[in-house]
Length: 195
Image 1 (cartoon, helix red, strand yellow):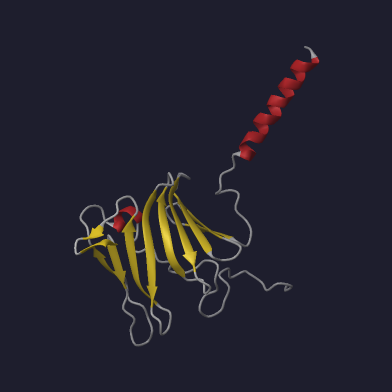
Image 2: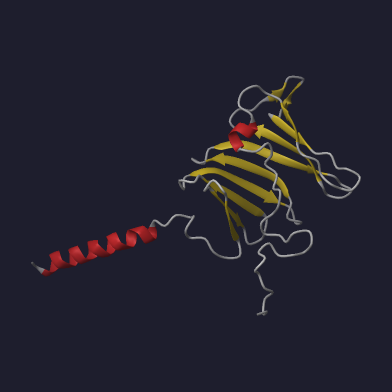
């Protein structure tokens, strides 16, 4: 064999060997302070990724087969609370826009309004106003505890819960913040410089 043919064979061998490394999915290439992975009982995974300035939080949900099924991109305020989000399907088609409302007195989440991104629906009484397809309300009791979501579906057809898997898009917990007691999310985490 001539030298050129040998180099082509060697080159193809290395290219074939490196291809799986280059094609490593996002599920396997996760690390760092701005990424959190949640493994669910059914085998599916959720990957949370935040921007370095903490203004954007991206939630990607993968099926147990490793297929991307939903993407939720949250816009966060300075306190780490979502102020709005957009929800996409696995092919990155925008499905919903959501805005969140908080009580001024204590900053607790009390409302979500979800709008259909595919079809603009207007209020029949005021055509300039966009109408949500679902409204979620929360009642705060005297102890400051939030109720379960009270969901109002305003249009016929598939509900948000049938598409999204839950009745609300609100973050129950931010995976990058400590719990209310101030403990880190990872129970094995140690302070910087500690042993």
